[in-house]
Image (spheres, one colour):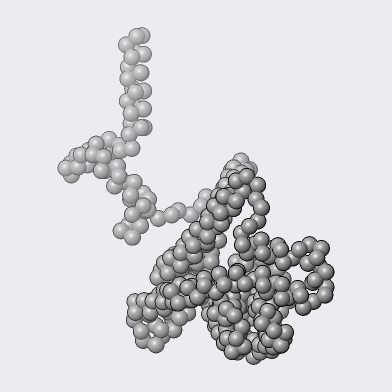
Length: 410
């Protein structure tokens, strides 16, 4: 009886070994006849590669079709996992929102500069030379701004700070309402305190203010340099980035998505270039006009007009108001002339310059533009206002080419 039980146990162990062994005895004998060691670990690797359909182009195998079975448990697990992953990604995006904003702005600028590279390529300029030309132009503009514009801006800014109390007294003395307000709240005294740095601060607040200003300036310089470097990197790899993004789209829809995406990127690029051109014209025109009227600090004010003109809707008005306020310190006639100039120029920009430069750049209705800018400014500030118009153009294109045809087909 004991011998019978031992024989059965041995047979069971042998059967278990045969089940666990992926190679059957017949296969083992065939391998040994052909001089192949069945226990070679490379053989198991080769078998897995054959089963996975690995090739030279796909060394890790070809993806298999998804299983059609969808049990309630599997659906619940997938839904829960999706919620957890989306929540984790949202938390990560919120934690690095400042960096993501710099990346988005850099992509936005690279999209605007890419049409210039493509234009040079279409005119038989080699790809490398076209890219280097545009990058050299961007770096040259930045270097010129730093080396040529920055010194007079700093000098004129210091002079403006020193003379601002005198301008305030002059403006207050010329208006009875402002004189009465100055007697009640001390407007001129407050301007003098702000410009001289004699604001009364308790304890270590003064040192904290200095440190805070220094940190703010350092953050601003870091943000500008980061955006510049990322813009040049994205511009150099723009084609590769687009190809990699398009590969993530299913092949059956890739051609359609590619055409729509290229149309959106083209609109964004033309909008950026058009906005830069109109802002440059506004800044140069304002600077020359203020210089002709002998208004102080024309270079600084012209650059201010160019920068504020980049902001849709309200930017030009802000720049015009600041320039007109400085012109009023020269004389009432100079201030009135400045106001008239900016009113006429804004009409010229709105009805002549912008339609010519951006006639086919973005086809967005005025109402949609206003709503988009307001939402963008509320979400991301100035950067959101800059990104709002091209994003509205992208949404409008998708609605026209995708949503409307689907609704018509129902």
